[in-house]
Image 1 (cartoon, rainbow, N blue to C red):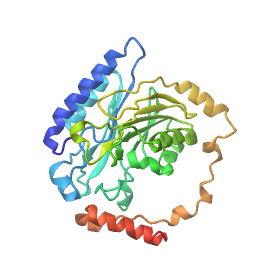
Image 2 (image 1 turned 90 degrees about the vertical axis):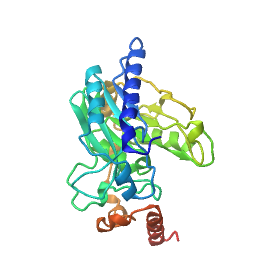
Image 3 (image 1 turned 180 degrees about the horizontal axis):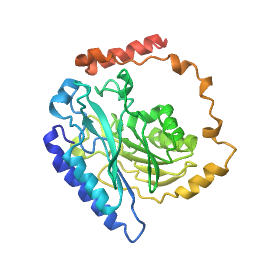
Image 4 (image 1 turned 120 degrees about the vertical axis):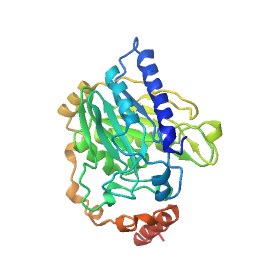
Length: 318
């Protein structure tokens, strides 16, 4: 785990080494075309205030290290999701985003900013909370291996996130995670597996989920559960790394043609074709617990905890 932007270059060196190792190591088994690293593979949330993240960790795009990774992906003819990193954008001074990108032939193909930060521990800006946010909030990229949409960790506890991606045409839903277990158990919790499989079934899409595993020196007070997996569009786990520690790989084939035939021919139990969004009126009246953008300088873990309590009070839970 890194906590300063000066360490990013060395971390990207390691990601490039792993990409080369995986592509070369599996060349006689199957052609590796998509490689996904976990959340914070480049840079974690290491400070409790957005101002500290901005001062110590956040980078902007374009970035020479991200470009190096994109060049390697183009050289090998693969697509890479390099986990996530902290990003700043000159259009919104003082804001830090938890950002992931899809790189491949053609460079940086998509940028996704986490819409649902993990409150109150993640003092980052959601693009949802920027008035008139002009960029695509849920980008889906058509590639030679299928249409790919990205989500980050806690995003997947909001089914609207993956539904939005699927309705935009995503065939492969990529989840990068640093899911934590504060009780010290290393094996993945059932909820991680359950969520990945349910999102695949309800969106008739493949799920590629890469989750951070713990190491001994970074174990307390949280254990990152690991549990990377590949799930098909009917919820079958095609590959699963159950052990929470060390660097391991979940590798499985994805048959996009079979998915497309399934989507074309299926009528029964097919939520994408049966969806009635206008029926869900309460979601349109819900309010975010985050502070307005004008108060960005005050965003820290304590303020966010108070805001979460305010939202719970409005809902009658407190």
